[in-house]
Amino acid sequence: EFVQAYATHPVYTPPRGPQLHAKNWQSEAALRMFLNNLTAEVAEDPERLVVYGGIGQAARTPQDARKIVELLLTLEEDESLLIQSGKPVGKVRSHPEAPRVLIANSNLVPHWATWEHFNELRERGLMMYGQMTAGSWIYIGTQGILQGTYETFAACGRLHFGGDLRHRLLVTGGLGGMGGAQPLAATMAGATFLGVDVDPDRIQKRLDTRYIDKMTYDYEEAKRWVLEAQQKGEALSVGLVGDIGDVLERLIADNITPDILTDQTSAHDPVNGYVPNGITLAEARALRQSNLEEYKARALKSMARHVHFMLELQQRGSRTFDYGNNLREFAKQGGEQNAFNIPGFVPEYMRPLFCEGKGPFRWAALSGDPEDIRVTDEALKKLFPENTHMINWLEQAHEKVAFQGLPCRICWLGMGEREKAGLLFNHLVREGKVKAPIVIGRDHLDCGSVASPYRETEGMLDGSDAVSDWPLLNLMANTSGGATWVSFHHGGGVGIGYSQHAGMVILADGTDRADRCLRRVLYNDPALGIYRHADAGYETAQQNAEKFGLKV
Ligand code: NAD
Image 1 (tube, rainbow, N blue to C red):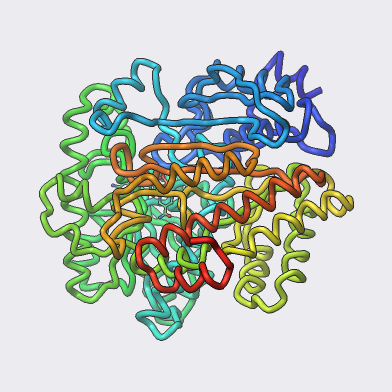
Image 2: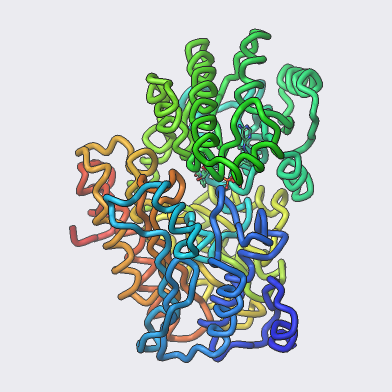
């Protein structure tokens, strides 16, 4: 039915249920997750194949998307499909324990690695921006960043507010695919939240998926709501339609200093992401079509203005941090010389977790049945009864997270835990405790898979921030280990020229083959994080290497 329906009218809806459409579950998993990335509930702009993060796409063109589906439906167990920046370009001979799909997105020789050159190639149909999980087919909707955002806000609370974010006001910009996780993460951590986005449709999507509580176009109304909630210690989240720079300017004029201040507008892309100050959204779209140079100049200037207000609020006492969108660099290019006085969130809050091999582990139920996720949640709680932090997270997520597309779960796990969880899921599939196989993956933002000097590898102890051998080793380790699909991208998170990173996804289909692949990949992947940080001189990573018997 799916094959026939797709042939006559291609739609981006993943098939659900226990029935196989492709020739094996490995190809079927890639097929379902590819279509899941593009389905309307998940993607920010499915018509343009945009999944999230500015113009992060899953396929280059609709023709490529169709061809990818056709090829996945016929892919054999001894073949691997090659995807070059969202376009299927060929198959190679491989074997059942090798990845079924090998993906490379947005990679350029370093000297040519600029947005200008990339956009020229993109205009000519030669490239696609893969972001991190868009082009590597493991985006799971806004939930994908929810726990990371929650951990960041909670760490900020522990460090600066005695572990209690009640009566604290958190202000930020950008409520898109990833930024949209901020309101729910903030309220889960107990804070009062004000988020600003120029695009009302984006805030509406967060309302529809229960990530935000309220929305308004009126600054005064938003201010009244959040100040009242803050006073009462209520964890309320408010989305305000507007330009973030303008709103910060008004907060300063009104003498309101947020306790925590950050930003997740799509600042990594000064042409197709950030919307310049002083023009409407429609005018910005028109300017993008008519004059890219002018658009970029305005965007850079607006980012400088935006960061200038952030610095002013930082001076007044707001705990201010960059949230992984390269806002500081582009603000600097726009004229704000002090932009880097704002610290990045990784050295501030995330690196200790990376030293344990921890990162955004996630899985999706290919059956499409939410009950399968409940079964995995319960099984994990039994597997790690001592991990109260994880149990608390799973319980909150079960209660508060609305699924988008195929049901899935994010849960940060570290060295040792990931391998155990993967084998447990494979066991659940084998025993028929869940209705279909489960895929396991992660964000590229992980402990051992990224080189990104303004984000994951900012301020490394030994100064090796820009060394990108590590994500390549990660890719090779996961390919030789037998992940089900692997990817290597450039420019995710912070934009073209600023990062290189690797992704992996692995299938638990209840077979012995899956057991072998899971044992290798879910050991190697977090181990790379520990090797990377131990090598850079982090003592906790060195202790963890010893604890887990890693052969450093
Ligand atoms: P997105 O493109 O889906 O959303 C960005 C939002 O910013 C849009 O809704 C847009 O309307 C809004 N925006 C643009 N200019 C604005 C302005 N001047 N004022 C107010 N709102 C404005 O992107 P996303 O997936 O939400 O990602 C946001 C950024 O965060 C990207 O730069 C991305 O690379 C980065 N990112 C960070 C992390 C992390 O862990 N910190 C993870 C993923 C992505």
